[in-house]
Image (tube, rainbow, N blue to C red; front, top):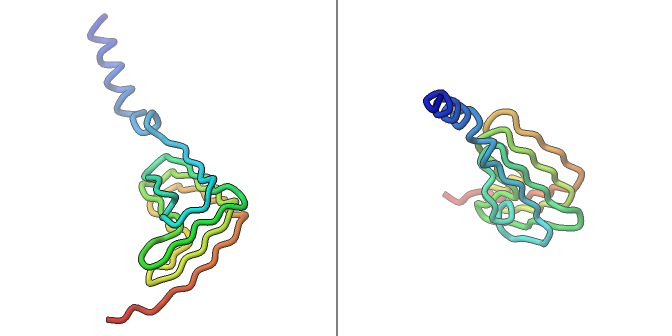
Length: 112
C-alpha cells in the first residue's frame, strides 16, 4: 500500500509540477523595467493595471514572456524605444494575450 502511494505521488508530481508553481503577477505602479521585473516563464499570468505604464528603452521589451501557456492582460500602456522596441514579446505555445491598453514603439536603427 505504501508503494502504491509513493508511485501515485511521483506520477502526480511529474504531470502537475508546473501547475503547482504557477505565479500570478500584477503591475500596479509605473515601471521602467521589462514586465515590472517579474519572471514570466511558463503557466504564469501578468496583469498590467489600467492607468499604469511600462516604459523601456534600449534592448528591453515592455513585456517578455517565455515557456508557453502564459496569460497576459494588458489594461495599461506600454511604451518602448530602442533597437529591440517590442511592446510585448511572447515565446512558446498556447500563450493568451488580452490587450485593451495602448502599445507605442519607436525602434531605432542599430549602428554596426
